[in-house]
Image 1 (cartoon, one colour):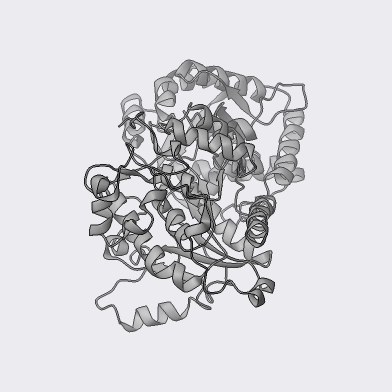
Image 2 (tube, helix red, strand yellow; image 1 turned 60 degrees about the vertical axis):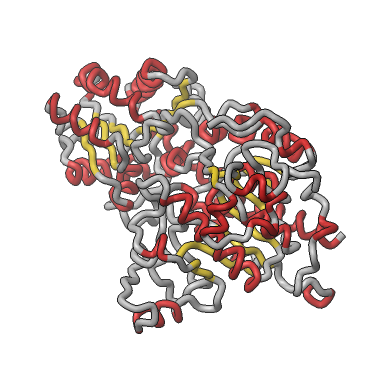
Length: 536
């Protein structure tokens, strides 16, 4: 759905009206904005639709708060834990996925639920209540319309209840499912940060927001519409709101999860971001209010201490450790047990729209045949709509001892990183990507398409050069992927002692570079910048 080019909302300030939302003159004072409160810890509310874990400081003892749809969940968990360690009064708002959290209800006031809520400690975890996500077994439904409705239910609870209750100094929102919150927060006098983890958006009518309990009339002028809105009533039924664009426009600070992804959004090479919004992003970057911050894996991704591995290792013992883990992994997924075979690992969801899995299926058989002498193996540990095509190829050609396809399992995936020589990420677009960073931490060299966060984190390795950490191709097609795979096989055939040194170098450099504490420090600086501006 293309957006209207007629008088885009941004031409009249940041919104579809003559009111510029950068002007706070119409915003009332916050209840706790008093001189005596300025010495307390900075209070930040993280609003996220998914998270992998909560630190004990927020939930003692921690109940099973796990809702993962992608890399956002890992980053949110790292952010919450890291901010608490940096003395930020961090709160979290997320949907109450009761089934996913292990709370099956026959009654809202059942003993199990009361006990469960008591475990949430000091009221810094705020679970949004609505039946639209109570009974889900995954964060994002395969039924497309369920996702926008669930996002509205989540945002309704955040806007109507959680924001007034928490009274944060800053609200930090993540992705399109929170896109209305910055506008509502601005109306309450609360500055916001909006982080873009992906390019997906949804477009929803104001009338539908009203129907699901959001009174957008309070902040409608801070939203972005498909066409220029004349007034609320005129736009209510037929002029849809773009959630991602609205989150960008109403926020005080915007960041993407890699520097290159911000460039791609501004230049229009990724997604269908409206021109007016791209111009706003460029202006915000120029003024120091937008930037790309490269994500980092959770500290638990460490081969020296990962309990999922059969043998722990560090850069000095990587070859021995990876060999033991390769044997265990091959046995577990049904591959021929051969620790000397080059093993390629696919860890990402099998989504042909983004992840490029179709490129691998196009050349899968020819790669296995071309490198039969080396015993080349490929292991896929991932869910997604394209998984059936891998199964069909393996079954039709009888490749079960050379190609393994398994459903995603966290522990098996971690073992796959430790076992593999190479990790495959031929994504068409990749806002950041964490798998390539985890791979390097575990001594598995990534094979990637040059885009987004992959471009920012992986550089091409040339045998004998002593630099680079993976294999990068520019042209997004099966030929480009095949070229990169052949370069990785050239590397694999090099002297084993030299390769051992390269693996150690990549692991050490990655351990120093891809650290969550550095990412957390960048976000805290943004919060402090916003807080200082509010006080001035």
